[in-house]
Amino acid sequence: MLAMNYRGPFRVRAAQKPYPEILHPGDAIVRVTRSCICGSDLHLYHGLVPDTRVGMTFGHEFIGVVEEIGSSVQNLSVGDNVIVPFNVACGKCAFCKQGLFGNCHESNPEATAVGGIFGYSHTAGGYDGGQAEFVRVPYADVGPTIIPDWMDHDDAVLLTDVVPTGYQAAEMGGIKKGDTVVVFGAGPVGIMAAKSAWLFGAGRVIVIDHLEYRLDFVKKYAQCEAYNFRSMEDPVLFIKKTTDWFGADVCIDAVGGDAAGSALQTITGRKLMIQAGSATALHWAINSVKKGGIVSIVGVYGPTDNLVPIGNVVNKGITIRANQASVKRLLPKLIDHIQAGRLNPKEIITHRVPLEEVSDAYHIFSAKLDNCIKPILIPPSARQ
Amino acid sequence: MEPTASDYPHINGWGIDADPNNEPTYPLKNYTGDDHQRLNWERPPQQVQTVEILHSNERPNLTAVFGTSSPPSGLSGAIRRFAFRFSESEYGHWLPLLLADRVNVVEGIVDDLAHGHIPNIFAEKGWKADWKHNRAGLVQNVVIGVAATALVYAFFTRNKQQTAFTRLKKTISN
Image (tube, rainbow over all chains, first blue to last red; front, side, top):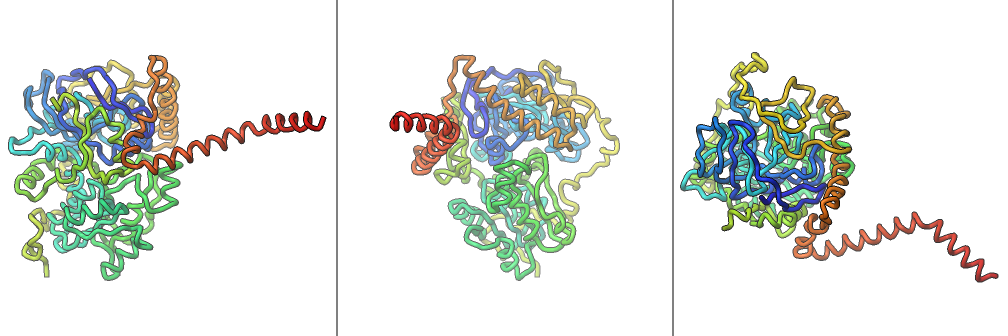
C-alpha cells in the first residue's frame, strides 16, 4: 500500500509499505478516505520531537472505511465509515474513565507523559498513522465513531483533532459570559478555538498571529478581531491597552513549539533545540492574561524544558490548564454543533493533495505557501 | 450586566455551552476517584510482542497495545536503548533520542542506497511546490546554499591553494 514515509527533518515521501495487520483482538484495519496534515505534524517534520524514526508514517487526523475487525470488536462492522480520534485510548484505565482519553495509560509504552497518538513518533507510542491507504486502529470499540449519514466527510475528518482541540482550548479556559479571550495563533486550531470561544459566551475574541492571510481568514470565519504582532511593538502591551490596562480574562496558546515572534525563543527553541520548541506564544499568554486569569494550552511542545515566565504565573495567581484533546468525549457535542450549523469546519480546508504528492503538501503547509490553512491528503484508493 | 445572546445576533450559538457551574472544568470535571486504585484496573488483553519495543522505565510493563513501526536497529537503535535507561525526567533520555534521530537519517540514506534506491532529496523536501509557489525564495535559497558550500570548500582547501599559488610564484620567478 502507499503511505507517507518520514526520511528526516524536512524530508518525506510517498512509498510502498506492507498492508497493516490485526495485532490485537481489539484492532480494526481502516481504509483511509481522507487524512489531514496537522500543525503538530510539522513539529515532527521539523525534527523537534525526540524518537521520530525514519520510515514512520505520520497522520493522526483521518477517517475511513472499516476493512477488517479483530475477534473482540463489537461496536464496528466491516464497511462502516468512521471518524478515528487521534488518541489511542483503552477506555478502561483510570484516566480514560475520567474522560481523559488523551492520557490513556494502556496505549503508549515509550512514555508515561502522553497517551498513544497515531503517527506521532515513538514518544507517542510508535503507531503508524493515517497518511496512508490503510491503517491499524487499536481499541476499535473505544475511539472510532460512525460518521452520521448527513455529515460531509470533509467536516468529519476535521473532527478527529482540529475541531475538538480548538473547542477544548476554549472549554479549558473556563470562559464566563462576557470574557475577553485572546487566542495566540491563527492556524487551524487557533481558528477553531476562536470560533468555539463564542459558544462559551465570550464577550470579545481577539486572535494574534503574524500571517496576514490567516488573520484575514479568521476575522471573517470566526467573526473576531485579528491583529498582526509584527505590526505592534509589544503584543503584551497591546493586549493590556486594549483591555483597559487590565489583561485578558482568558489566553489560549494555540501555537506550541513552532512559534515566531522572539529571536531568543526561535534560536534556542527551533534552531538550536536547547529548549523544547519556541515558547513565545505561551510567554505572551502568561504575560497578557489578567491577575487570577486562565491560560489554556493546546499548542504542542517537546518533552524537555521551555523558557516561560513561571514567576509571573505565581505572582499573578494564574490558573494554567492544558491537555491533548479528549476527542471521544467531545464528539457528540461537536457533531451536534455541526448539524445545527454552529460550527462549519470544512471551510478551513484550502488544499486537497493526492497522497502521492505528500512531500509537496508538507512543504506548502510548513512554509505557509499559497495561503495554506489546512491541507488534506487523498489516497489513490479513495479517488477511484 | 451580563451579556445575552441578543447582544451577539451575528454569532450562531453564542453562549450555548456557557455553564456557570463548569468549575472545576475539564480535566478535573469527571473525577471518579478511581485513580486511588492506582494501576489496578481490568487490563485489556496484552498485544503479543513481535518486535523490539522500548518502554519507559517509569512504568512496570508494556502497555496492552503498542505500535510496531520502525523497531530500533543499527547505531541509532543502540543509542535509543541507552536512552531508555533514563527516566523521562532526565536529559539523558531525550538528548540521546534526538541524536539517534539524526543518526537514523544517515542510516536511512544508506539503507536506500543499499536497496538500489537513490533518494531524491529535492523532491522529498517539496522543492516542486517551492518552484510553483515560491520561485524567488527557492532561487535565493539555492544561491545562498551554493555560496555557503563554495566558502566552506575554499576554507578547507586554502592550504592546498596557497601551496599551489606559492609553487606557481616560484616557477614564474625562476
